[in-house]
Image (cartoon, rainbow, N blue to C red; front, side):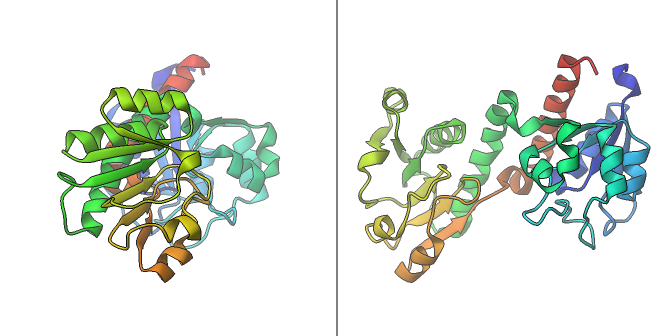
Length: 290
């Protein structure tokens, strides 16, 4: 299939998918949008039913995550919950399907286990690029929840993966004093060479003296015991994927402001996030010569 003959269907999702549709259209691709029945016509975007969009397209792009915990399509702009029917699943099996967190999609719809499903969120390119709007969104949210600037603040970042690295770099460039907490000695050494204070996750017993605490590790690290050794004035933001790493009930009882911060690119930088999705999807198509 030649790239200029691709027929895309963008199914469900938040503002990222709306910007993705517009970007694909501007590149000259054929695009149908399904799962947006609460929106009226907008420019060149063709809003149709999910069934119509899938039936008349070759390549299906689902959101990140593709489905909610109950298996329904992640479609905040649709007025009703969408569950893929047997007919829709059969159609999807004959298409190229791109999805974020595709493992959840296949668990919800086992019939798709043999389909051509590509998880764009697992690509290294996506993870690296997406860490930037995630970091920017995290700091924007922190400022919304606080009465102080990032400049001059003391920040703890737990976890030194892609997001932790981008967040550390950005916070430091904005004038914050950054402390990185990481399990791996190599990660701690790397963080130290960049001028950050470092702590070993395994020896983390208290979180005193920080204005903002960002957790990026999807494991229950900030439990009742650790939160009881955290300043009440600290603002805690959990960026880790579900189930996360913060005991929010304990934080509430202790009087600590703690917030779950998921899907930040979609909330704070949907246009950039859409371009990242598009780039990764097109790269996968080129790699597989689809």
